[in-house]
Image (tube, rainbow, N blue to C red; front, side, top):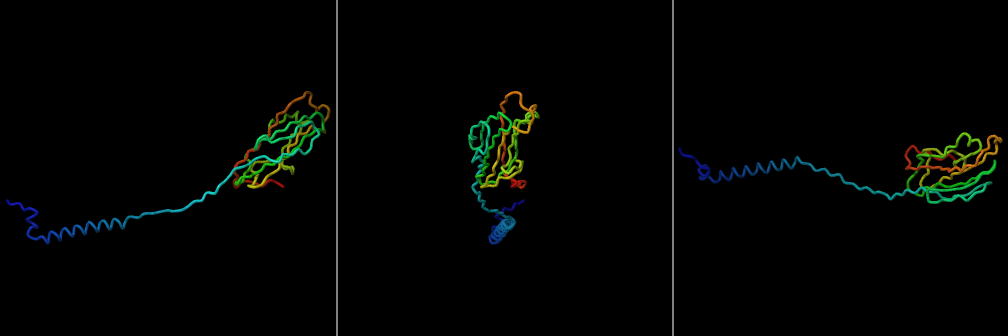
Length: 196
């Protein structure tokens, strides 16, 4: 039995061989073009500008308003802490100062927490008032705003009440370490204006 080789099939007719090779090449190129037409590239381009921002809530402009007691002037010991010292020795003695909470940053701020310590006992409340409020007498509450570039003025008053009876007077001298803390955070849509 005689086996035919590839050369036997196409040896005599090279044109047929070239024709078949040309058809195969065209088919391969056609498949490549079809594949290329079915591929897609997506691009998402953009720019984002981030503006500079600053957070600057601090105390400023502390002023002793009134006093009838032995005192030292209140002072700002660092940008977020103020101190005072007074001795109230008789009914009617009081000590009062104002201080500004300033927002020099570029972000609106609001109150996130207020604490006043110590909580006066019922007996201490009979002869002592310890008040921290806005200068206009409105209370300080959560969510109240200090808008960027503005300030709010707080009033601090410590008073030996004069509308008391002899039985309400303290029987011993005492020293109170009074602390009032206001925590400010970035304002959100729930912030409210400080009452005028």
